[in-house]
Image (cartoon, rainbow, N blue to C red; front, side, top):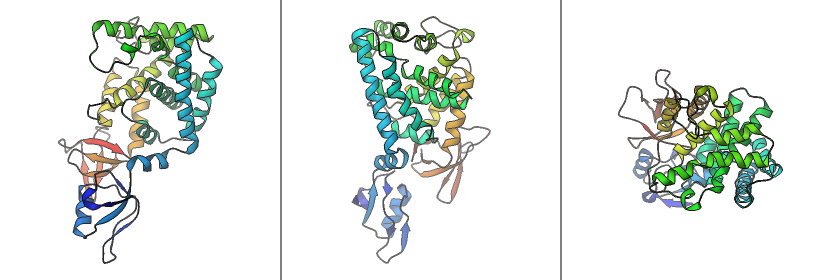
Length: 342
């Protein structure tokens, strides 16, 4: 898309090389536009550039056609499973496998988990989309923790179905986005027991049912519905709880500012000391942080740069290169990474 330089916005991406009127090569194709880049284009008297939206560039570079198709299949499939549970209190287990297996086969081929999660981030994530993402992220985490392929699939399936009990919650409460009364919270909490019953009535699988029951339990006994502590929470439930928590924190709420990814990871990491199990928490944090190296970021100063290194003393304060300048965020405490993008 051809656009005048005065209309450029930060984080847009150059679709073609930018040349000055005299033929000087100013910026290469793929450059992420920031304040400095706009200033450079103006100084070189460049009026128009070709850009592509960040969303289209991200989608085309990160998601293959097969993965896009399987993600949509898993989301639509979950909607059908959810509606079946709503009307009959049960679902067809074979239909669950038909939706989930193709997705996980594609996921096996995609290891850049940060890019994938950034693509899936959007406002008003539906319950169906959220359940697909929990199933997918649980699969990744189980793989990182060394579970067998069969166990990884079982954990992903449990993550995919963890909120199925919400089908029996009043849609007025289930779909609420604003203030929750105490009554609303108590009603919504029933989804864990309801999910256990629906899965038990649909599958001969106690473990998957336990994950639906336990994914809001916390190791210090502060969770629900049974106030379980660490020894009594199933390992599969511990993994799904971490995936569910991370994705709930990272979902963009309508009308609210986007939370910085590193802030979310820090919060999840802190919850690994008493709330969530430390093993899946560390697996998630370590793999996402390692995947962040080389990613484009926008700092609180407005500058855009690239993460070069994670600081061992504070992994949530990386070393960022902006142009030819390096910023050690563990020392420059006034700077934070406000956004990660592709």
